[in-house]
Length: 423
Image (cartoon, rainbow, N blue to C red; front, top):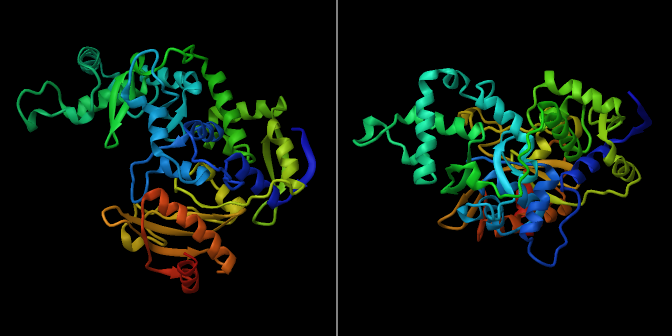
């Protein structure tokens, strides 16, 4: 592997990772972000993860707030669903499919998902492989498709089991599996959501006419996704490139090695948070940015909060390697086993992850509760930090329509007091 001789400092790799994720510089707009701004941020990071939890705004909206500040969430909905419109001239620019997990993806990448769709259609991938391989289920798949073709888009809530009332024509469990399989295989797409519930429609009706549907072979698709991922990550280990879209290492690693051999990924040495030197890779298009970061020209200045599902944290282990910060989502743990809280948001201040807080928005009263607020060990609860977090928190409250704030527990206590005073 060709490797640059320079050993880069931790500050440079942090700055590059934050810059390529849109988290380096503070937004300085004199106007509210537009739909084009929303699209540009998704294009920058590649894809944005979807999640159902909504103690505050759901992950897909929060990820964009972290980069844009307060914006109209309707922009994202319109880019993704265009009000549920169908037909070749609809205005969608985004779609939902599997990438790192369930994600929102630019339609420009649609063709790159088609090899996985084919594998799902053939029963070689997806959650329901054994169900699909059972020939007895083929008639149900045909009935579901015929129903949507004739009667239009369908919600899972429209499905009822025979045990829940008369007049039903399918079993709920099997029918839901059929919908999911037809979605995974590309026959159906998510045409809209109502109260976050998926509405399935034919892909032919959901996709605009301009979308490229020429299927690449699997190797071309994975290779291209590896390049998109490496650009978005900025700098990472060779194995972490594949983490960005959950590619299997057995298939992805030989392609990563080939990209390295071709010079599209470049090996670099950097000293990370453990004070040891590590071998990393950078996409060649990002090398000038890494040099600027090493020269001090890319200086992270933003203070913001991150969704637990933020793409900055997707590469396994990079939270500890770069920031000596352990990101853990504890909502699935029993309450007594939680160390920090149900849905903690990491606090990014400049180039450090300095703490976290566990929020709960009381939507009826407009109260934002910080049930727990923590600073990381060694982080001083300075007046400057309190002022920066307070500035971000004011915009966070504005974004959520919150009028009041309550800090219920702070560690250290003085930081909570300073933060409240700064607000």
